[in-house]
Length: 242
Image (cartoon, rainbow, N blue to C red; front, top):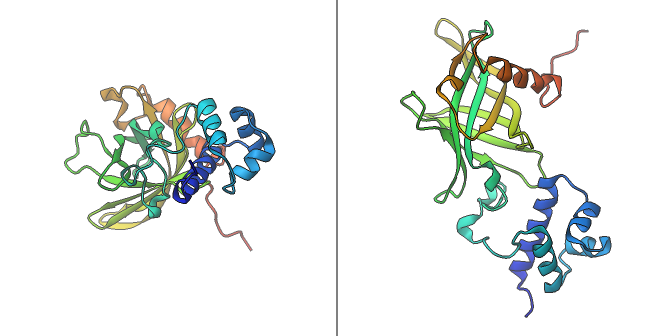
């Protein structure tokens, strides 16, 4: 039975997304799927047979044709990623950043990422464990072939933009946030700072809140926050001196 044109386009997008997400070349994809490189070159431009798709699905243990209904695909504005290919993001996290007051204090928030069917897209929000009254949340944007995810948070018109590296093998994401912070007294100013979002199986009470130097989690969070700039997950650009 011939593959419908819409299905053909969806399969091509799924294959390209897999290659980008796994950060592999077409040659590596061909090896995993046990296909010839020329077959993969044709595949990514929409030239393939049903036999080729069955081969890929069998070898990669994934579905390129199923589970891609409208309710399981994020909107075009979010990057049109699928629920299936981003399932590894679902879970509990600690979002940590330096305190505006400095002095080595790190503020850590319990967060959750889940799939929002009404959106649809990945939704990040503060965990119900949070002691704050208002739960901040934002939707996750993942452009095709991007190595980063974007979170736009809107709390009563106050916007925060977070750019993070994609979830790595250690279940860590590193990046930066642009937001408004108190400069002094009641005066607020734009601020950019390193942030991390670490995924954990279970989040204990002492892993969140105001984390002072010497606290159990301070060293781990501090190392990850310092790595943002040291390992070039983000850069701060200033005007060179004349």
